[in-house]
Length: 256
Ligand SMILES: [Zn+2]
Image 1 (tube, rainbow, N blue to C red):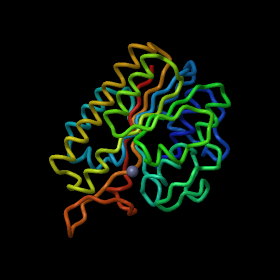
Image 2: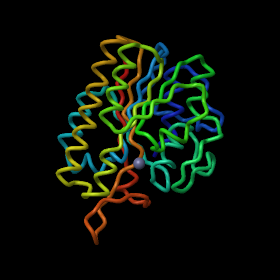
Image 3: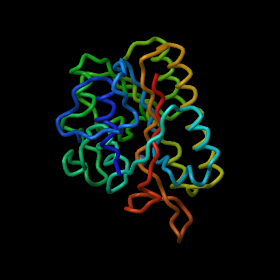
């Protein structure tokens, strides 16, 4: 089974960019056709903790994601399935031991990342994320544009604005409401369900904007970092354990 690391190698293959130093080589083969023209632009939407367990529980959301996307891939998170460890692997193509974030900590990554690889290839990159989140902090000190926003809706507004202005080749958009609400109210509470629904609606908004502005030759990816499970004692959500609920993921792509 492939895992989060294979996102980096696959994105680099799709964009014909040399992958970062520590990246795994294997790719999600079903996304690559031998005659494909390299994609020039990418939009990466990363909703925190939106794992396969949530899609199993709310099949209507799974169906909507499938309808919006051209491809779906099965993969797992990395251990331990917590946010900085997982996004570290997603955006370096490396194991936690290799990239160095192997517990819940948020240092600036010193190793080669997909962002460094994209910048070397001449791509203009933007990361739009909730202020002080892992995605906002661990990829700092690169020649890219960072936008730290107060919360998800403002992240979306900024991302739509950047897409509309067409100022960047690669835009990362990070949301965290589902992760926040699964911890506070349980993974399948009404509030948590609304958060998942908003993440799916945001993906739809971003797809429509990309189609409108970029027209063709792009990748859109929906790349959550891990899932979550209900703590049997409290009913509240948690993650960080090597179990199916926390580890199993589906990523979605729109290739055009
Ligand atoms: Zn997370």
